Every structure is written in structure tokens, then in C-alpha cells.
Length: 166
Image 1: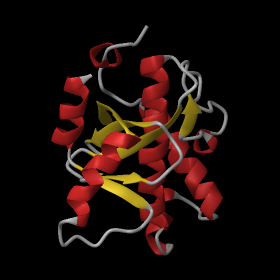
Image 2: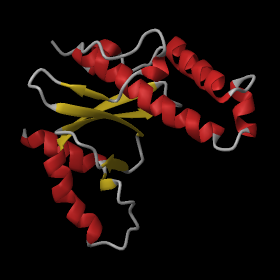
Image 3: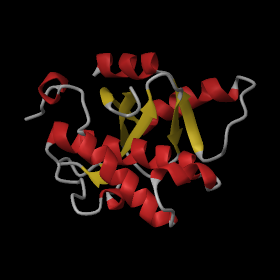
């Protein structure tokens, strides 16, 4: 049974955010999260880890997957195999960002967006790799410069459209 977003109140517990911050501080070898500003890309790395790990946390709670590492949060994996034996990837993004879909060997992606400094979330939905590849032609026809590791850059509406079809 999937918990609805309202059951989870769309909030991330502060203790989870703080534990991730502490693990990043420890990994980067700085005294505190305030010192991350002094480290090249320290804040960027922290935000990247917050989006990645918190999206795993949300998907784990919504779908009861038992994939979130409760001991060492940043050791949680973004990939899992679902009950239909399909390989999936969990992605986190800021609510107003374009969502960059990496070219990974998966069947589909589950997407969670964050706002209010990662304290609140919205589960956006899932999109298959095939649908991403179909949308990637839109990128190639534009003047956008895109890394070869990215197969699509999507907005929230294109993911919602995809979920409305299924």
C-alpha cells in the first residue's frame, strides 16, 4: 500500500536533514556545515546529497521499499529493482528546476521535488526511459548544450502528462 503525500504531510523530518548534513561534513572533513562554504563545491555537494538521499527517503516511505539506509543515510542507493523485476532510479530536484534525466541502465525513473530548503517535498511521479528518450529529440532540436550523460531535460508538466496517460 502506498502512503499518500498527505499522510506523510509532505514534510521531511529535521532530524533526517541534520543527519545527512553531519555525514557530508564528516565525509568532507570540515568542522561544521558552516565551514562547507570554505570548501570548494562544499555547498554544491551538500545540496546534491540532500536531494539524492531525501528523494530515496521519500520513495522509501511512500512505497514501503526498505531501501533507505537508516544507519548511514548517504550510503543509500538511488537504484533499486521493483516487484516486477524492473530496474528503477530515484531522482531528486528542486521544485522549479528543469529535471535532468541521466542516461542510466534503468526501465524508469521516480521523481521527487523539494522546496522550502529541502524541508518539504512533492512526489512528481514516474517516467519510463523510453518516454525520456522520445522527449530527448526535443532537446536535440533546440540550441541547448546538453551533456552526453543526460538523455532528457524535463519540466514538471511533461512528467505529469506522462503519469496522466498511465
